[in-house]
Length: 632
Image 1 (cartoon, rainbow, N blue to C red):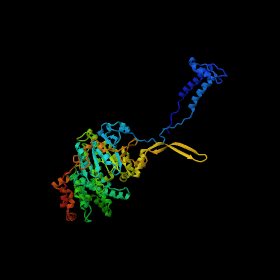
Image 2: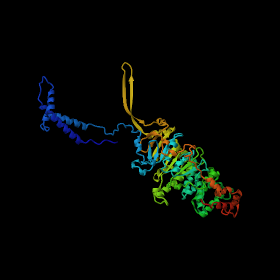
Image 3: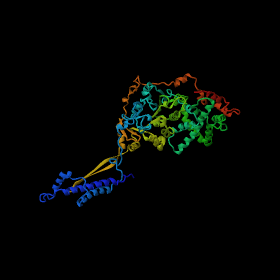
Image 4: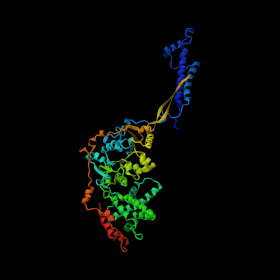
């Protein structure tokens, strides 16, 4: 309990002595005043008139005490002593804040978070902006740049938040786009400012940059990260039943991805995920007495690189899963990788043109087009995001430590990730942990959701809290989700208001009463939040009161002149043509990824049944080796 300090006696003693002497002096002056006629002035009021006219004639120092002067002086001293001894409450009183101190933040308070250079700000609302670079801000205004944006369909997430911030041109950008429109609308402005534009297009595979995760695997532990990203991205829950199959599939993925990782090192080729599907197809034995093609390949790898991680995982998988369980795990993996039966998808991951390791070294704008309803490729988008985090954290650390071979720390760019429709991306492994460490690497994430339940479904309730706690800003644009509205109402806090109750009774002895008291009230109830006007927003900055303002009007941005509203805007509508398929049609096809598809059943049977035939000398498998003697 917080109490006030104990009263000091000395000030009261001094005040008491002063009042004692003042009482004594006044009484002596009264005694010196002449008495009037008792018949005319029975109360002696004339003596007070005399005192008011002659008080200056009396010396201020009079130490000749009389009984009446001591009596009046004692009364003065007693009054002060009474106030000293009077018991006063020892608690702390906050007048007007008895039940809560929540209030709306002011525009002037929001202005203190802005950078003096308008281009270095993140835009939240029409009047609320925040400096992107903490090193340019006062210490007490340094907030992490992760943000959570809550908004349903049609709540202007893209128009009032994403596109205005892209037009700031103050960092490298990664933007997810389920419609594939944003790149056309702001691409001209970005290219005009010198940005290199890349597109990973899961809507139109033939017009896309290419992403090969093996290009970014630099150490053995990356095998686990890739396998986990693939499996966890589409995992729906953490119940024990589903977790069993997820762990089983992950063990198989580690073995197969690890095989390609190690095999490519000594064979000198660049593998890709499509080859995992080919390995799965020859995983099971055609003859129970003879090893399968995949078993022979693992045996050969074990001879070349003894006791490697991939072989260990393969042996562990074979030891723990047999019969129907093994077939079920194989079927799950086959279904996932069946997407690579499409030639367009296979070409998408054949090589790498994204160059993720350069995104904090030069200005790059990356647009990731993700289907709104088709989740078949969700594991690819989740794998891409994990690779983005892993790669850029590694690059940032090398710059911070002064170990980067070509660039210095002062050349590192901030990387902003605008993840619209988080549910469409899939579960990104270790996202809660990543969001807590990327601040120092000049990386920030802006997650856009329709409700809190979307995050909880992907990451669970505990991890959702961690993600939210690592967001320096929460921007509310609209929602109908009850739980989200209650959470935001709680975040807005409680205020103290005056409440008046009045009552009146009628009858022979009618009466009325009025009672006033102070009570607590939510600054904004869930209903009030849900009915915020369509053009308004709420901004919750870390350790600040909620700020209510108009959503940002894109048309007021200084660079809106370079923004395209439709294809009719020929000057600003950005178009791109990735030459992936054109180039590959002009080149000799890379047949490495199609080896197992081209390997006939007869050849496989010969390899498995020939008494003197080994997998290394079989013509079909040797063709596989020859076709893999390629580089990127």
